[in-house]
Image (cartoon, one colour):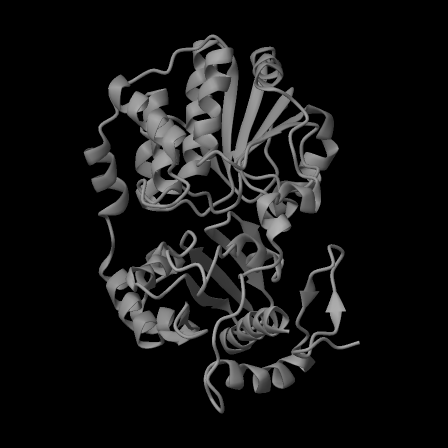
Length: 402
């Protein structure tokens, strides 16, 4: 039976998903919620129920089954290790693999870094002289241990999913995301950690290894993951513990100014062209609480830009005081569109908008991430994705107002 805004199906977790047939009927409800016909006042806590927000692990039972010491012992006892992370790795994924590779070198343990590209040029800088292999085919060679870092989701490991399943008994997972699958036989999950590199610090110390400083050191790799995953310590995830870890890494000798310049100040002119196009598309929903930008294939084509040029562009509307959620919709192929979600902590005036968990919003579209940063990919064009997003937001407001 259809829901209040045209919803008709659920996935395995009981999360309702929009069908294309329901989008048209949902849009009629959207027009009302955006102020056309009557004045709509926010009466919701986006997104989903409070108990789910407080305990996101309970939703999919993706949690630790090993301790720091057990993970450290398992890694330290290996002879040859393959280190990998999610496809299209970010600073935390790359920083984690580099930090672990440099740690294993101290123990005399052979290790290989396998990355499912593309790898952004700005992130290649942090590798320095550390060798890594970029491919979309299963890794070559034999390894008695595989360490999967910064993800536990099959959807982010598709190129090597079958290869990993065949070696499940030798896979260790280290991750700080709330959503994941049974990728690793041993795993440690900490959703309170600001980055996977933050989680690695006690593991490396439990292995009896040094957090080396200087260019190409363990500390530098750990810092890159922590800094990039927290927006250089601007995001809510950069709490007291994250800042304590950052301070310690700086004391060891990390040059944060140089890292920031090499990672964040290397944009191409195409980035500004795409930013201008995205801002032209900017629209606001839910009385200005949600900002939505859309980048279409023509924008990429005419600017000669790429997905790499719109990295972190979703953060731009967050400078608007009233905006609680920012969404970037980017169509990357004729029938494939990506969502990038960002949100702020609870508003000072909680009567208007309370905690906004974009991890749960992303899960409506088969994605995931963190409370304040998440993403998803859907088989729709940009316009269909935009309409589906508005339908999800309206369904939430209808449910909260009822």
